[in-house]
Length: 246
Picture 1 (cartoon, rainbow, N blue to C red):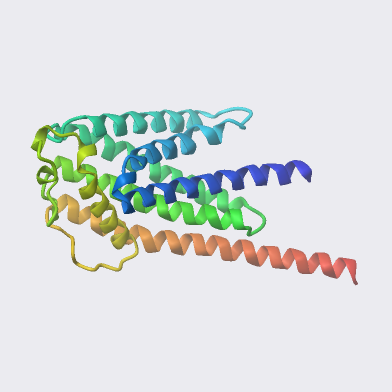
Picture 2 (cartoon, one colour):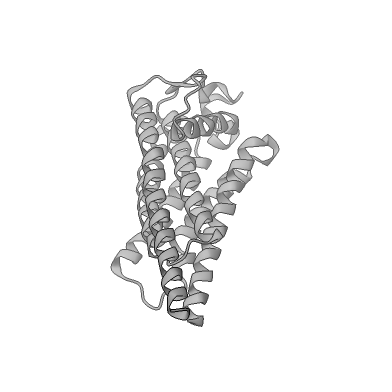
């Protein structure tokens, strides 16, 4: 019993840390002086998802090894994309591919892990919230990469006009545009749609559409899992109480 409780607490700590990192990245977009925290936060998220969660495992499966390699690949792709000039449009392609697969895989693993929890706790709710924020942040990151691959994908934004150095500037110089793209990504995820930023190219439109589908779908799946866990928890408590007082 004590071992199970300790394992559950370790999982909850990971949920709490993941939520904290996601909130940290969001805060960096809100305050321009803290914009340097955003790239660091993304890197820490990749490490947490694929490396730290594996430390306590007695043995790693082939799937776990592939997942770890994917995380390292996503981290390298993120670093290269950030330091290369905007005119190197090809540098955004590995970022789009690796992060899309990584977070898709991570969310599936997260939902599976949430469904295995026996009790609905604050840590469990934090894990569910972290998964939702992670989808929004990844959508923003992928959309930002698409904007560097195809400048002008999102109007009225244009990353080439964000810096006096033009196409020779690194993407880190254009954090204001990426902050606005992340804002648009969360607008799509929540299906609010204010209309102040619009996708105008086919790829950006498809990304906006997919993000709008994923948001409600994730909420529906997670709500089903949480309601199922809570119902089972109440039934177990009722049975235990009935056995104690027949």
